[in-house]
Image (tube, rainbow, N blue to C red):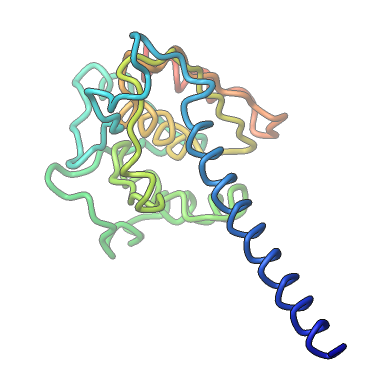
Length: 207
């Protein structure tokens, strides 16, 4: 008799545990869904209807040629080597991009490894506009956002960054952010040891 009561007691504890687990699982899932738009300003009277426009960042599919004005500015990196534009129709990392053709190329590569720990010669030859793989979780691509969102500032902190990589970062932001959502791009030099030449480069390139 006692063993039967103990058995039923264990069954009851197990049933209660499973029930509470299911309830908590449902509660947290529902709460997460409701928080998705909790802090997002929504225009209209029916915020829980599907939004009319799916938000997708603008993605660069092909490389762009620099304008004549930008080329005439003579933007150069800190080693005196012109930052080259990517050949039209070719956005792949080709083996010849790392080839050394003269002493200046050798100096750019060696100093690049010394100061930035990567091949600046290739970085200078890549151009400013590159495809960026979509590494988001597939579920992120199915999310819908309000068609009207507040603009935002993008802060880029850098330290001893190569000019070509810094310019490419800024262009990646411009290429992939809807203009109505981008308020400004703030570059923060975190006490770099290479001087403030990046300011001149950015002014010549973007202004």
